[in-house]
Amino acid sequence: MIARCLAGTLAGFPLSGSLLALLLYWLPEHGDAWIIPVLLLFFPLWTSVMIGSYLFRNGTRAWLTLGAANLLVFALLWLSRHVATG
Image 1 (cartoon, rainbow, N blue to C red):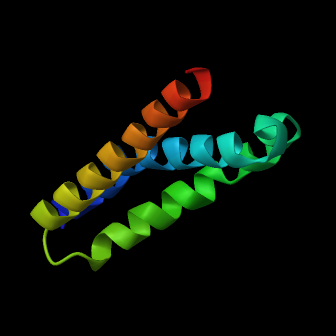
Image 2 (image 1 turned 90 degrees about the vertical axis):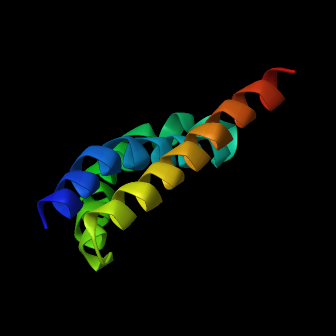
């Protein structure tokens, strides 16, 4: 149980931030007017990820799934940065 709790807390924090960064990137004008409303969504999203981590059967699956989600979202952020500038 503690492994799922830690997975949701430690892996959910960067996942929530990076998901909201992608949302800001895809908003019109790269989200200049949307920064505060999107920042207000951070805590509910992070809390949802923490709650959702208890749906996994064990801590290993929670860590692997949330870790893979982090890798995917950070890869999308990296890709969007390099596609936009290049």
